[in-house]
Picture 1 (cartoon, one colour):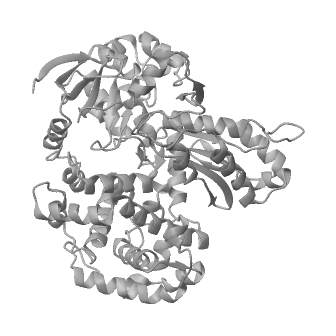
Picture 2 (cartoon, rainbow, N blue to C red):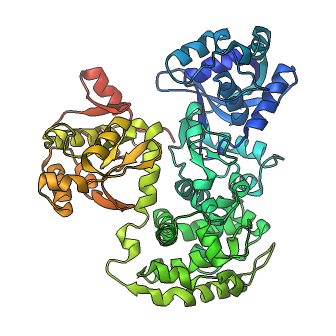
Picture 3 (cartoon, helix red, strand yellow):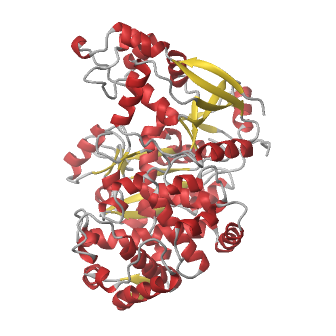
Amino acid sequence: MSVTPRGMSVQEAYREYTDGNFRVNRQYQRKLVWTVDEKRKLIDSILEGYPIPLLLLATRADEEGRKNYEIIDGMQRLNAVFSFIENRYDLNGHFFDVDQLARAKQVADEGRFDAKKDAEKLLDANACANLLEYTFAVTEFPATDPAAVNEVFGRINAYGRQLSAQERRQAGVISPFANCIRDVAAELRGDASANSLDLSEMPQVSVDVTGAEPEYGVRADSTFWCKQGILRRSQLREAEDEQFLADLAISILEDEPFGFSGSSLDQYYSPESEQSRQISVKLNAYGVDALKNALITVFSVIREIVESVDATDNALRRTIHPGAGANPIKTGFYAIFMAFYELCIKEGKSPFDSHRIMQALENLQGRLQVAAGQIRSGPRAQNIAVTKGLIQSLFEEKEPGVAQQGAGLAIRFENALRRSKVETSAYECKQGLVNLGNPRSKNSDLLNRLVETACGIANIGPDSSGAIFVGVADTNADRDRIEALDGVKALAVGARYVVGVERELEHLALDLETYKKRVVDHFSQSRLSEPLRSAVLGTIDCIDYRGQSVLCIWIPSQQEVSDVADIVFVRHGSSTQRVEGFRASQAVAARFQQRPA
């Protein structure tokens, strides 16, 4: 491996950043976790001329031959510097003067951030120059071997003092088990995304733990983990949600409660251990997608029951452990989750009375065996049996069971809406099939455009999937118009607004099932190429999201170019365009060509 040390000024680094040349691989990189105070300390160190740790970058060429950098070590530091330049926070009441850096001024003029103009609140020209001239110590190496990149990351981060136990445990580990846990954790937190992101996109998929990071896309207090008191916000920052999920997943795959300890869990992440080998075999037998679906489904069922009875913060903690105060309820939630797993997944039953289930769980913690440190399997099994005994009479055999009804779709839908702000090409939101003009009328061409959009999303590439949602407004203007015309209250999810499709049924003289059938029939009769058409037809469904019905058209990834009547469509940002010309067609085809292993 060829390693090249060099210097990179802050000004050069910012230019590379605004050109989109810093990439983050979320398979092993943690989220942005630094607080504003931690960022300020770094900026102060730079202005004082103190040395800071080096940046480690893996270099590769993109599709157009341009050099870009995969950040192996230094993501938090780079984000701290760039966000200071872009006036996201101040230092001692003073902001960076954007007029001192032409590239930053250009970016501000494009509307990508709001530049501060009050001269009294700006750093002086000398301080700005010192910041821009500061030289990062950088080590580069070619990213020709993905396994080597993972190994380097793991070695650098496995013993990092500032990493939590779970972060050290999973550093550089990309086994099927570790990847499964990461994926489910991101879905449940609400920060799921593509594996590779531009550094500028990372704030949107990072968690605001302190409440002082408005640019971070997910608030810790809004996650189920923290909202219900299962974990503290600080524990979420330290990836204890992923540790908890690993604990649950091992219990499911081993078919008995995991005797948890930190050292025991380490073995399941150690590539050379027997436990790691065995869990990979069991995960393969269970199925990665099946495990993801089971975990997300059970979480979704529990969330629906709790929030349908009491939507306020800490409702679950108050119910099962009234005297908990600010203490997390990990023991109780483990028992509840596993009891629900046995009832909903293993036995295929469905809950039928949310209020009585919550009543049955009152003061549950007092009935459970609680341990600190190493947690033995036997007491955990007894805790699960106690919990299951309290609620099992409130579950019934029903066809289809809750697990077959897509209970986890609400979480998947929420995450897709959040991702749509960053991954604009992969997602499309339509407010409905009826236009918002006066008079109201059916948008006769919309269904044709939905077919073309599905084709365009599929042509993003073989590793990309996406979705089209009907019943979701993507602008404030549409939201306001719908609320005025139809009297519905839009539900905000990220930067999108769920308005549902029921409001259109009267205009179209349809019921919900016929509304869905009209869309299905149009796709079925379209000239969308196979196998995409059949794949899409198998995914079209209506979900009930907090009382609003949304039509979801999921677009699975494809391994070849798709077309509509021999015409290829692609996505450019949020627009769908027809491909014209030989070279453009070849460029799309190249996305699906065999890639080196």
